[in-house]
Image 1 (cartoon, rainbow, N blue to C red):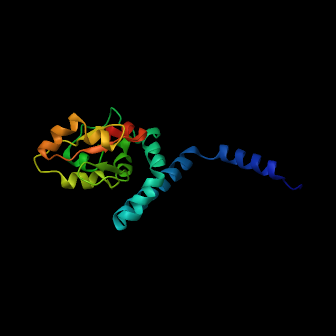
Image 2 (image 1 turned 30 degrees about the horizontal axis):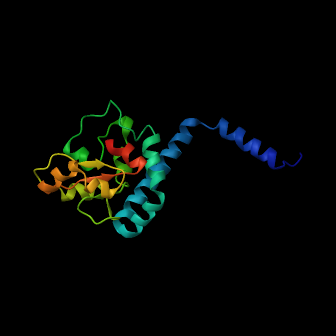
Image 3 (image 1 turned 135 degrees about the horizontal axis):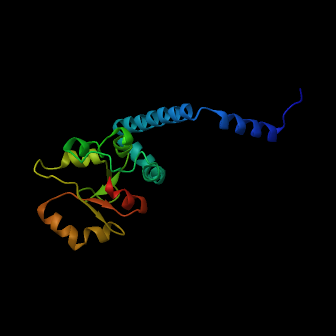
Length: 176
């Protein structure tokens, strides 16, 4: 038996990976993703300041996962939004099982918070008056433009909190 060099080991690993049961790999990936999302959600509740700092550095990757993974994108088979689905960010269905879970990790600025401070959707919903039926957001190039917008004035005059979105992935995620 002869020894394998680095090229041989790489080739062997590639071949072994291609022979793996794709259902098993998909299941392992699903379990690991759920555990990571659960861990990050717990960390966001245990130490919000530390989580927000982590999110500021890694938000592009979290948002990219929401946008590019078909399990996170709203599908036509999902039931219409209800109050409970709004509270968990996105309606659930067997085809869209993780959307609400990863949605809890997202953070955006809000009109009622000072500049640079972010909030989760759950925190936004908890601050909503009982009569408010919708979640409001404003897309703008930056916070200054958003808060000086005539569209924002109507909400400001009524005392309604508005989520502020201006980063590229944030605008893409406005459906969430």
